[in-house]
Image (tube, rainbow, N blue to C red; front, side, top):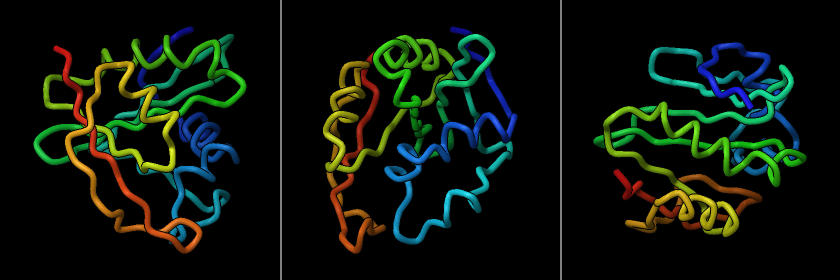
Length: 146
């Protein structure tokens, strides 16, 4: 697996707009995946995981509170083989600021995945967004290893 920064919109959308992923990361207010345009600005850093020249995962970093928030997405068919390796290697791009993740409580498998890398839940808040007409609880996690 090659892990590197990318601004290739097609690669980024190949992961973020995948039906199994977009269905989880979008809210009721989100556009259809065919209309979604990931922001490509200096405020966002995209790190892609590539296998045989094809993107299989993406890590998105952006400012959050006093640090950086991350979002990890791995295509379903590659999760068992590459999710752990990609997560560990993509964390090397995080910089020196405090690192956070916000994960809805409906995705316990993602919470456990984040905890396996050294994230701990530091607060729980009612989400400002709805999914299927319902509010959920967002877990704010902070990376505790350094």
